[in-house]
Amino acid sequence: MLMNPLLVSNQSTLVAAQQRNQVVLLVDDAPDNLALMDALLRPDYQVKVANCGERALQLASLTPLPDLILLDVMMPDIDGFSVLTKLKANPVTRDIPVIFISALASQDDQLNGFRLGAADYITKPIMPLVALARIRMHLELKGVREYLQDHNAWLEAEVKRRMRENELEQTVSIRALAHLAEIRDIETGFHIQRTQRYMEALAMRLRDHPRFAGFLSEANIDRLVKSAPLHDIGKIGIPDSILLKSGHLTEQEWEIMKTHAKMGAVAIEQAEQDAEQPVGFLSMAKEIACWHHEKWDGTGYPDALSGETIPIAARLMALADVFDALISPRIYKPAFSFTQAREMIAAGRGVHFDPDATDVFLAGYDEFVTIAEKYIRPKIG
Image (cartoon, rainbow, N blue to C red; front, side, top):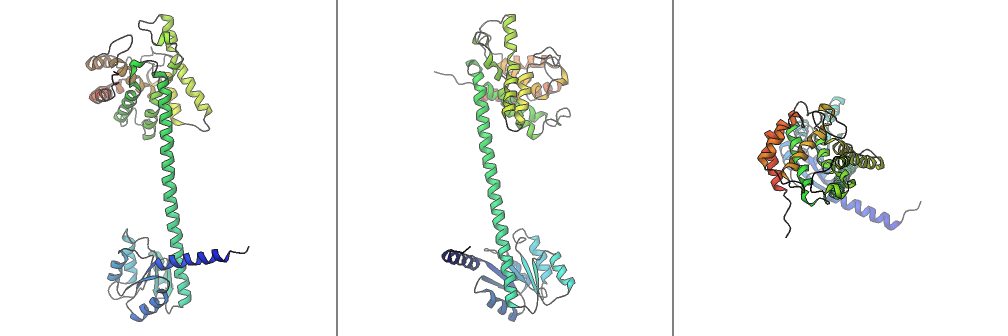
């Protein structure tokens, strides 16, 4: 395929410009060697010169950093091997490629140079054109490495940005679904936000507890917080005449009300089936929706689970949900005080609630009160 002459010319100009911006540090105690290499490199590169190891270490860390260091081995103050060791120990200079140029031509000397981290080893007397070709090759390799590092950094940043976008979209969608259930009962106020924060606080307090540590990983705590708002999603299917009834429910109405747990679980399960791949928080949300009304003693609903057979996520949600229900006004009852709520939660230890989770909840009760007071439904009018 024929190349466009103008394109070839532009590419050559670009490469030449890039070369002129590249900095090469020459290190040699012999003036003749410095003069030779300087004359060889200066037409194409910016050249810095050091005639001893100490000066080389100083120049190597000054901005602009060298793109390549040509380093003699035999020098009076610090030999080249020691200079390279110091360069590699310094975070500022450790990634600068170093080529040894030395009269030490034995296999052991060259292997020692590579072992210390040299990019190449050129023996004296040098062949100028060959040396220049190898120098150019290492500078091009450095450019490729930096491009790949920059590209990978950009890709990582882009992945993180898209993940944040996806998480935000997911959170907004969860909240929207949860509000569908909540909006029909205006007295629940900020119930979603409060129970979500209760769950987070309770999980963080329990994460080192022997009975809960295996489950409460950072990932699972995140799933708990994400899935908590969907705990009452099944109430969408409950008729207003029951959901908003101001008096006590009849036995038949209560049986209908209890079906919201299974309906919520079924709805979430259908969402799971529609997903192209497993979604961790949906599995947890299904457990919470289905079983957060189960009780430790087995008298809850819908499946009369008891003790450890109740999933941990549902056990924690039970505490969060009941606490918020107690301190919140409902169409059928006034709000209880924080003191009354604390006494009622304590009375439910080992009966309604997991005993250890209850102890931790009560020990941190002030934090839960603070959360409750922060997310109070604003008065309208």
